[in-house]
Image (cartoon, rainbow, N blue to C red; front, side):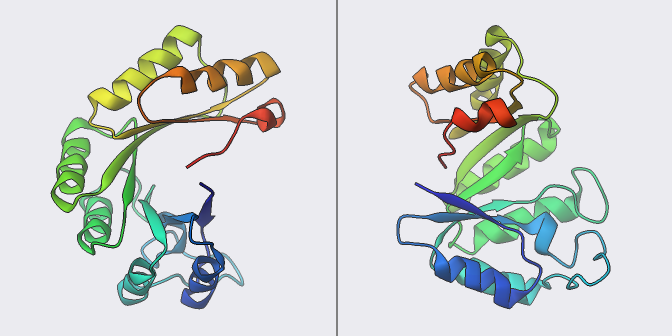
Length: 193
């Protein structure tokens, strides 16, 4: 299944991207990049979607992942949690993405909301510097599931094709895992969603 990240800051552009997706494709809606609650726009950039416009994005029939990293106020804030909970409450979001490093109370609130709304929880780990050791990669995947994940996502910086191969080895896990090796050597790794 192909997954496209939606980061457009106008309702029309978001809907255009969603409309262009095929029946078997899905979209990761990056609320932190498209919402008017996010950081102020740069010169020439649209102001972002208000909550009513965002509701129209959630109402679109394509499969969606709700993702919200930092808003204007960084950190795992109540506002950020409420944005994700509102997305899940629509009944039109199939998955929600939660960072590995989220504090326990925040993580448990999102996991409980996901369960209550029948939404699958992705716990995602990102390392933009390196690929951890094999042992550490396995520990990260295990921890994602301990945190309540339905799907563990691991995205790391690959410096060699060996790093990429080690990341691909995570698919031998019988649980649902999405593994991505970023960077030039990571180009051989798949990008499933």
